[in-house]
Image 1 (cartoon, helix red, strand yellow):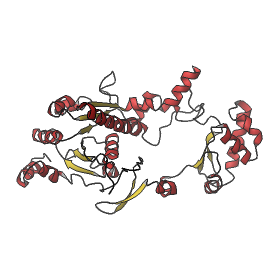
Image 2 (spheres, rainbow, N blue to C red; image 1 turned 60 degrees about the vertical axis):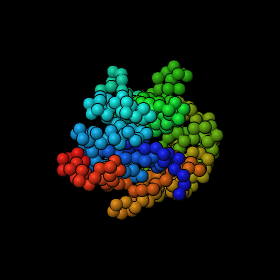
Image 3 (cartoon, rainbow, N blue to C red; image 1 turned 180 degrees about the vertical axis):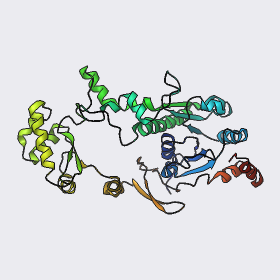
Image 4 (spheres, one colour; image 1 turned 120 degrees about the horizontal axis):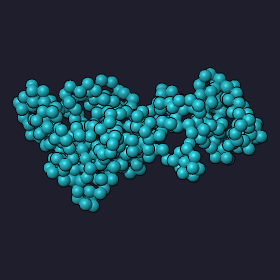
Length: 380
């Protein structure tokens, strides 16, 4: 088995919804010894199962004094704590950073929240759609003269939250190697979402004009960068942004006269759109994929999820993995971070809810009778 570069680290994951478990999945795939802690009656159960791979899972009632004390014992030996509570909740539970830092000065404590640990929005509730709205990202999703459209994937949760948290945690690990001290990592999904708005921010700074939904270079206003319907009601994407890609596209379709109209407005833009919309309706999506995939125009189909899981490139890259779970083999999404010498690995299938509670407690020195009492009292 390849060396796991982060196998010397221990993480206690108190998070529940998508951002935290996605972050700890990336770290667990790289070897971090990860223990997920949930309330015994958590209605979410294990959550998204494939995000729990390579992790252990235990139940613990943190509102119980005994449960809190057990968690503190786990944290005494941990390197990282990850949580997704609303600001103020960890303080009420007695598991906030300052409390834990006093016990473990090397602890890296990462909080993922909607709006961050301070500021006027600190205590507001929210979800992905709300953070994208504040960040200005949602304003660019949709067609000209139409309403904003909700993205089909959780941009704020994953890009704004999980990925930013992963970078923050790894940076804090490296800093600890130099200073010997841990630190608090404050991740706001609003902050992370705003950081994703780089291109439109650049254009605003350059032109002095506020970008408009559906009227910018990367939002479908011009035919060189757009989605087209095919003859079977499916769709394909064309991203011929650079002039040489656009010229190749026009020549391929026998319309060299349209090359000069790449960024044109008015009648010239409408003529180019009308031509390509009609042209792509002449064949099915599968026919266009067979014909255009190797043409240098930046082309791709709009796949359904089952087609994505069958895609030869993604399968070659190890992004579709079969794991044997508690019941049956299951297909899961692989790890997207490819390292040549210390690659990520999917070593263990997602655990059952609370599957490792007893073994974790035995690791703390608790006897079987003590564990039975904790279960009787609702602590686990």
